[in-house]
Length: 365
Image (cartoon, rainbow, N blue to C red; front, side, top):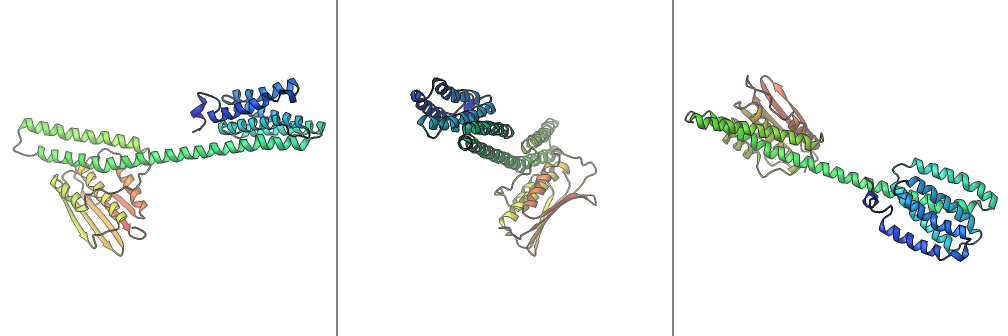
């Protein structure tokens, strides 16, 4: 993103630059007695023309600055009059602005090469090669390099801002998946269990069926939104909710999921490992509720030798169908496990679907 775009719609130069240029042009105008009329007019018109060209043709504006710098050096002779300092200051400011506006450096290098080929023969004719070259470097080349550097820093800052925005989108998407996706899956599971209740009338059974279908549709819409928000990027780690793993399993059981929990070894895990284990269990329960409703789910956590292994298995009913989501949940989960130094395996095994996360405690806090 070009920082100059903020003022290009109103003026070819920002207010501070216009103020400085106006002051320098006044100094040049007051020096009319020290210059021939044609030189005085050129010293005034050249910066004005360079500013006018800056908005649309910054390369031509830079060329005008280079030509003005060479002409000023050749007209200075052995002294440094006030008007020459004012002209040098004006083209310095314009060259800096040109560096900020030019997206590529190749055209500027062409301008500098043409300027060098011009000032050398002119300097030989007038016997003043070094002053012309020095003034070209100090008032055109160096400020252009400075402006180019400012542009690159501005673009880097804009890229960092955009990267932070995308990371925040990913974090929000992950939070939505972990909370809304989980709740919607449990809601559909509760509705499915209620729909099978024998004491329900046909009218109420139809209403519950519509509720279950709506919950499934909401889950599909959520998956589509998350796919757009995440844009293919992994989500960063984020604080776990206040629910413990025991609470996750208990809520799933109360919702009608046949879930059980086994926990071997220490329960007080390092914070990062605890968050990762929480996400693994939550994702596995959500997937079981969506893809294998009615199947038993076994959650097992075992900690040994500073490594926690989380294993979740659920049966695959013969009529199990693939749910929505495109496995984005498992992709994000695998990335979260990788970020804490662990590994994740997921897939069918002996008529069951199994998720195994190995979470080493080394380096976790």
